[in-house]
Length: 236
Image (cartoon, rainbow, N blue to C red; front, side, top):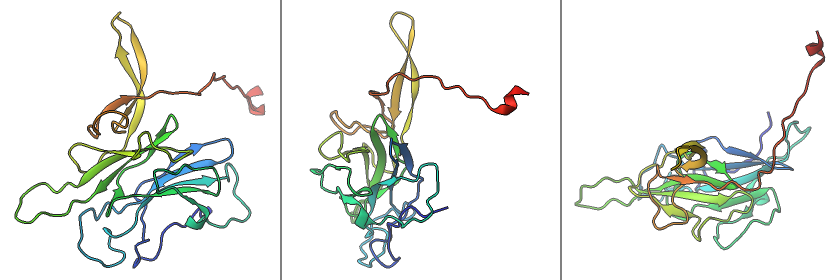
């Protein structure tokens, strides 16, 4: 086992980032794209503390890291650091393919990734929560602000200008799920449609529900061919 990257910092700094969910791994022709986001979901609430390393003060990020070691372990390897990555925190920037990947700093104080990323049709989807500042003299559910992000995994660009949408209701959005859904047609037949649950209404009016479903457009898949093989033991 080889350490791929080191992206955090000491516990008493605002770089003390934590990964609570497994990354999504997207194969490409030259490397595996490791898509992962940070956030301490065990400490989700607002904190007025200015102490460095407090969960609310930690600067969380979403990463795309190139892993060129596909299929074989390297004889030597230096872990990737943020110095090797391109900073795409500005929504006006696009990844040009240089370096070992990119990172995006979550723009809101206390915002953290709270579910597992999923890549479908070229876009990586994930959800975040930003804790709400408590209001004195009021009794209300302090669920914070929930957002769903959609990033082109190769470019870092969003499906809208903000890369994200704010979801109805707040709280922790569940991890996105993709699948083929059988839908009845008007002529009595059925069709299998590619559907994403939990990606947010990225291009419409309003962010929608964290459980809202959207049809995904799959492009560039090409024609697939069946592969056959045999081993010498199959002859006996």
